[in-house]
Image 1: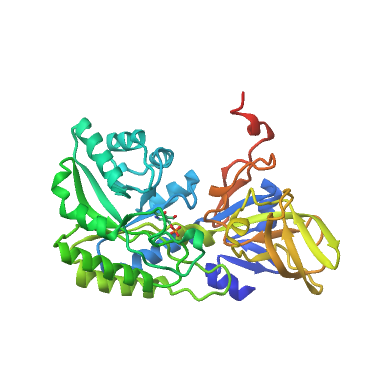
Image 2: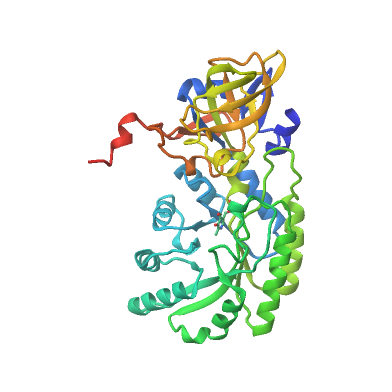
Amino acid sequence: MEKYLKIISDGLYRYVDGRLFIENVAAEKICKKFGTPLYIYSSTHIRNQITRIKNAFADINSLICYSMKANSNLHILRYVKKQDCGVDIVSCGELSKALKAGFSAKRMVFAGAGKTEEEIDFSIKKGIFLFTVESIEELKAINAISRRLKKITDISLRINLDVDVDTHHYIKTSRKETKFGIPLKDAKSILASRQDFKYVKIKGTQFHLGSNIKDSSPYIEALNKLNGLLKEIDFNPSIIDIGGGFGIQYKDEEIEPIEDFGKKISKFFMKNFPGALMIFEPGRFIVGNAGILLTRVIYRKHADGKDFLIVDAGMNDLIRPSLYGSYHEIIPVVKKSGKKVICDVVGPICETGDFLGKERFLSDNISSGDLLAVMGAGAYGFSMSSNYNGRPRAAEVLISGNKMICCREREKVEDLWRYET
Ligand SMILES: Cc1ncc(COP(=O)(O)O)c(C=O)c1O
């Protein structure tokens, strides 16, 4: 367990005398103050991950646009902004929240296959840096709205390069059968006729291959395909956006270190796109292992030869296991002696799919009232949570050294019907 904690957090999570610490604060103490279920985040881990990306790509001109869909808590956004990052957004809601967090619209890239007229209009008026355009229909819409607003709008074309990646099929986004991006041959004809779009300037290209990708090979494959296309039509973009998707360790899987990844991509980039700005849109890599979901055991139930730990966090708090069959390490907040036995860690929700972990080896001494930590919950955790089964959403706490900052209060029961008439 200690080895796993060291790998994912370089010592920011550790056991001290059998008690789990996050930075310099005991997890038990945080739960005592804020209750459970509770999301906690290590701010130092977030900063370290951003520094690792910057160092890995230090040889090229680049901009990190944090993909805020992974975790859009305002405190986290402000913290990421302080590390000199831009932001990747997918809606006007995200745009407004990023502005509130202090990001300049000049450092925002706006992706998404279904931008509405209102969203395009609003974003142009706010002075967005780049739209990532996903279809010819969207390009025409942006051109028409820009003409009405008497503005030239900068965009990049999201190209679907039909590259497969080794990840869950729900989070593969660059196969030709997905809804994302413009097919290669259509991109070719759009780029060839780019002069026809008088109110749009195609400054760059973008691809986003998927999420939780374990090594650089699909990125190199995509860059090679892209390079071929650009050479063929003699188009020299000033921006190349390689999307997000950098993987993290949830268990003991082999992930190419970002330092090696950066070297390989930078080498390709310097050779083939000298002078261009590279944009990345990492989400999971920055916040995934910065977050933990803390939960308390309600019952230990023994049924038909099987043990269940029924905990107070459910699929409404963390949907990844139910949605993608994702693995999250589950560890005790206070180490227990006793025999390790197989148990399912499940939530209180009325769905068979409501589980956080199946067939885990955990001490047979863990019982009602004990605390568990669900690791790797910082990305697509709280941001995908809901009120399903009438459950107010969890609180969020940011840890920085020995400081605890409540960055989102626990929802109240009254919040469940706040917008209902
Ligand atoms: C366009 C785009 N960019 C970036 C990301 C972030 O991906 P990740 O969190 O895997 O880095 C996503 C995730 O879905 C995305 O759709």
